[in-house]
Structures are given as structure tokens and as C-alpha cells.
Length: 225
Image (cartoon, rainbow, N blue to C red; front, side, top):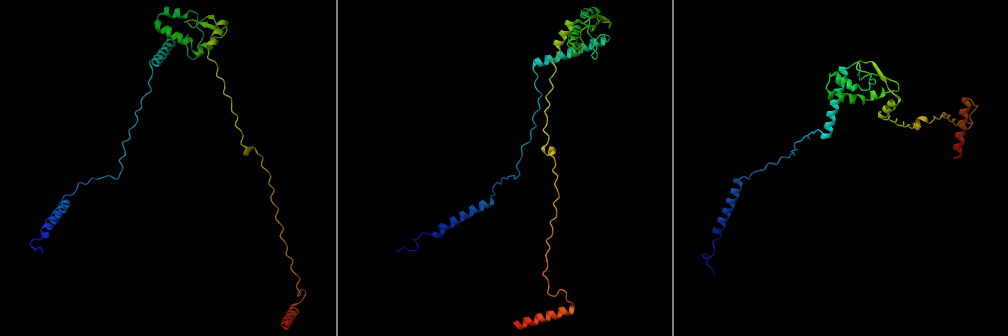
């Protein structure tokens, strides 16, 4: 048999373990873990407004726009300088060779004269004024020549073709509107069925006779039972 002194000291071995575990627990409790806060509200991304960019204009379009503006300015300048001859509202046929007269007058530069005159004679109103026999005018606004038939025909070829009218689409009339309303006759009321009452044996009797008859009937029933 083994003596008690030779047995392992279990208490001594267990106690440090328990102490270590308690120290571990204490250290775990004493040192709080770092808490990560999670927001329940979803953070919406900031709305970024799309950048509004102007449509790019090509170089050719810029040149055309610039040229149209220069032509318009040149025509307005000629109309202001020679109102008796040039007019936007009521254009009249110009004298053949009026460009040379404008240059000789030297009130405007040759560039302005050529640009403005070329735009003026291509305008719709001026082409419409080129009718056969219409008088032409000079810088003084006086008649100087006339439009020939060939010139009038040539001006017509320069006019834009008239637009064809769009075919009108006929809308179908509503069937409910066109359908004639039927005359509905009111239903005649049904005659009430008359219920004929069976003749009573007491008809034609006075009150005393009725009572007597009723007593007789009761006595007969009692005697039969």
C-alpha cells in the first residue's frame, strides 16, 4: 500500500489552476473590449448633379453662323444707308448694275456692299418681287428698267418649293354617339289576380240566424265525435 505521504498533492495542483482561471476571468472582465458602433441608418451617398455641358459646335457650323450674322449686318447697313431703294418690308427689283453705283457712291466699303447685296437679292421677298414687267429702281428710288419674262422665270426657280399640305385624317365618329337611341316602351303593369272567396253557408243570414246555425254545426260535430 502506498502511504498518504506518497500520494500527489491534488489540492496544491488544483488551486493554482483555479487561481489562474479566476485571474483570466478577472482580466477579461477588467479589460473591456473595444466596441465598434454600427449605425443602423444607411448612409446615403451624396447626390452628384450631372454636369450640364453645352453641345459642341463644329468649326464649320461656327463659320456658317458667323457668316450669317455678318450678312445680316451688311443688309441692315445698306437698308439704313439707302432706305429709298432697299427695304425689308417691301423689297423692289433693283436696277441692273446697281452694285457699281453703290461702289461709286463710296458710302460703304466694297466688302459690305458685296456681302449685303448678295444676301438681299437671294431673300424670299426680293425673289417674289421679280414679276414680268415689274419696274426696277436705282439708288434714288426712281424707275430704271423693268423685269423681263426670262428674269421672272429665273427668279421662280430660286424660290423654295411650296410645302404640301398634310392630309387631314378623318376621325371616326363614336359609335355610341351615332347609334340611334331605341324607343323603349314602358312595361304595362301586370293585372293582379283576383282571389274569389268560397261562398259561406251563413251568407244572407242575420246575426241571430248565424248564431243559431253555428250552434247547430257545433252540436252535430260533437254528436259525431
